[in-house]
Length: 200
Image (cartoon, rainbow, N blue to C red; front, side, top):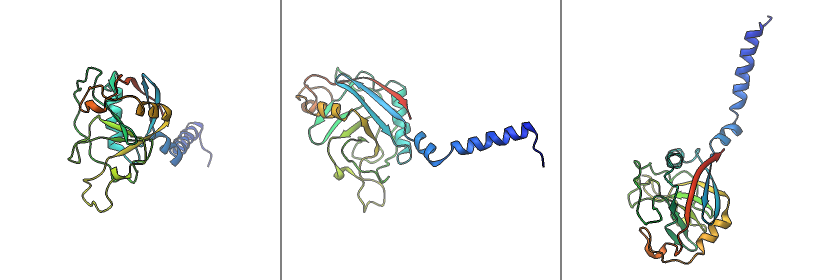
């Protein structure tokens, strides 16, 4: 049967749409990147929407709202983590949205260079606070025998460029007094000047 040009075009468009939804394309779409331009250089992280969809959605909301702009890395623990989120250079916190559900049982581990959500003691309390692991911190992972999903810290991304900036932040003198961990705050504030989505 001869196919009329409009029908042929429609079928061609459908085929193109299907080809665009290949596993590789879907995986790429699921890995948005965020740039943190800091006072010590740029850190770019790739977010994993496949393994931590709720966490990534929440984090991107904060990024697009400008929540992280002009905030500081308020906690630096050498050979452990650097932490930031909602504390301004004056040491005051910023309001946050509702918490996101704990997704620590997603198969990802708190390895060096990974990005994880900080939280309170209770499991479903993560908001905008995040940390970058300086070393392999498998002790922060979901416990294998936890059937109720109450343990661990959600890994939702990893550093793709700027790990040297992360290491430089981890080496700064401490005791600045800002935020909830005054002894672990850099003596000279390390500022996230701008956070922005830079593409898949």
